[in-house]
Length: 174
Image (cartoon, rainbow, N blue to C red):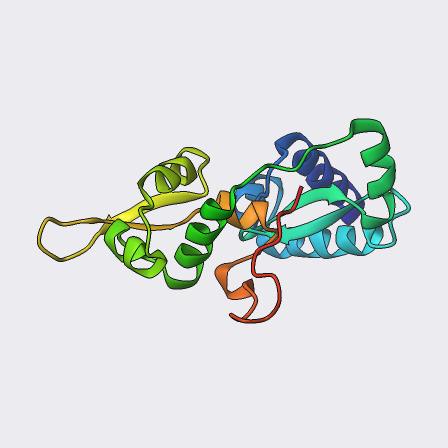
């Protein structure tokens, strides 16, 4: 299969998926080497914004997003409202993101307040998940962030979190 056809297929699949896809998920289209070449070429083709979208590497895969040049046009027409997250939820999410895995008791000790309702809301929104149990009395649940968290904040991995103390810690991606 030629690279142009493979790029078109990757673009179509990413458009239809509406979520990040990894090379493994794209593997029915071709070999890892061919897919890598196609994705790199597609990133290059979309980088200048002429087509209105670009590829973004996030959560271990790629997704289509509106190119920054065209955000105002999208906002004019669609008037998107970014997801609302309370200050308390952002605090708990930041603690988990930087220090995971954590138990509810550890979160409450760090925050100095109850996190029960906030933690339930973050789990419900699929930003946080149970990642195991602590080897301690009562086997408390350990919480960590999800791929949805990475997507929402435009991160490829937790390694992309800004160092603590450097300006705003978490910025929502719409």
